[in-house]
Length: 545
Image (cartoon, rainbow, N blue to C red; front, side, top):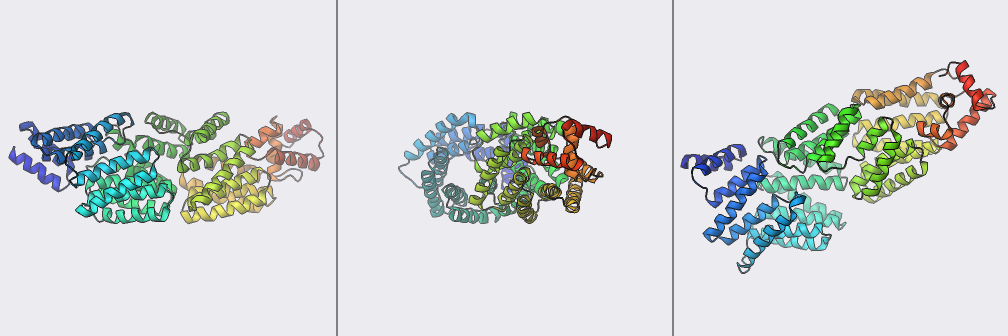
């Protein structure tokens, strides 16, 4: 037993978590572990993804410390048991009970300063912030950080300073908040902090980057988290978040094959863990890549898995329905998402998608409202990614509203921003709209150049639905115009011959009814026609269908 226990302790010191867990479990079967080794067992179990086993070991450590008369260490076990439950929404009452136990034990110690008291303050600060009291949360984190600094306790100091930085960001004190986070990340990347706090801070920091649209920090800290996870191959928590963030960044930068592989690994890794809070995000990211590549059946199932895991499947599911041609379902879904989504990052994603969906549904006013709100959000956040998305949305609305010159102006701004971000798919989407804008101005050569560039990019990425759509537009634009009609006018004539109303044509071509009416008038004038039935006969006679 002594030999097995020694191996377990040595493996724990080497941070070989699976080996440490196996040896400590074996030693515990021979003779019950003392509370310090139970704490080691709890940590190792958590890091290999055995959450319930970790909670059980923490509970045993708590009672063993109490039996020994070490109330401060018992309080510490109670506090870290709560950290293992923070993401479990259905166990908040349990957390409250253990927090009360820890607080009572520490109060009985007549104010003795200890790291356990600082960790308890961090828990209380987190709960206070979740209740909306951000100033109170920041004060509690600051108290905990002061204890950590006086005791020279790197784990407590890092956790508390990071919490303080997040609170400052929520109070819109961005410079001070980011300074706190950067300071903590120096100690994290230097390896000065233990694995539990390191993982918590890494994942929280990446979440912050997403919330404030800070792509530079997201890339830097994702790389650091990836390297840390690679150094601990048997570690399960935090690895899911690492893989999801890597997949999102690879997708943004056009490495879709690698992004899909990371998303697949995230789903597999999370499936082996118990009740992972990252499961919904992993399945949603996998669904997004399926949708973009045209694997609609697999995308539908992955969105459903994300929903079952607690992640709302919007706006991706609405965009999937749009790609499948079910505009009614897409519109209903995106309107619900607009009503329900409040958090800035999630709302920005919904607004960007809503412009596409609402234009397809023919609701130019609502699409304009979504684009305007996205522009306001971009102005307040002053983030490059948001400026790029805002310009794209505004350009799409201007084009649908019959203002191609304004559309080109806004789309060019978006094109520059997306190129700076390094997002080839978004650049291609903008170029496809630029092609439509040039076609509306009668610049057929300019339109062809933009559409060709967009098609080449879509085909290189494997974006089959977008490639098919642009290829169809190029084919229509390249068809010999009849009677002096432009490529767009031929397209409208085909729609008339199919029996569609101006409103339906506007929805199909993502332009306004006013623009459709102008095209119809031009068609009648150029071809000397007086009715839609005559236009239909002309289209059949000249084989334009």
